[in-house]
Image 1 (spheres, rainbow, N blue to C red):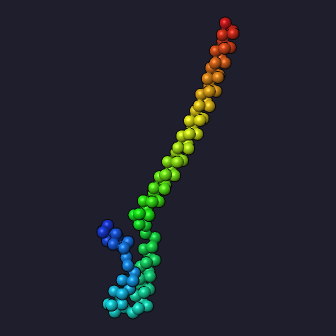
Image 2: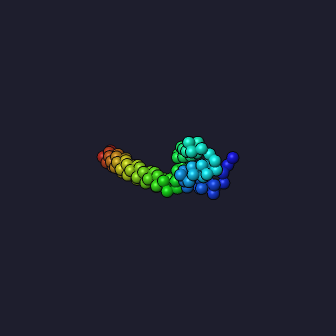
Image 3: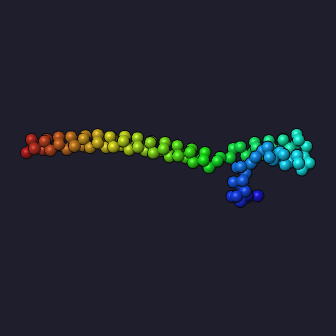
Length: 101
């Protein structure tokens, strides 16, 4: 069964004490009510809140941005180095040709 979004959001605000009290009020024994609530809490604990997801995703974006900036800087430095080497080769070739003529 797929829960609608509003039901999913309600699951994130689950109050285990209130749930155990309601189960006991409806005739369930205390130990059984507590065990039932514990199972529900354990099953829903891996769920992520929106705030936690947003914070984690923001840290991820910052990390990716930082790594791209580092890669751009390294690429730019390598491009300048290759350009200088290429320029030196061209100048050397021109000088050699001038001497030959």
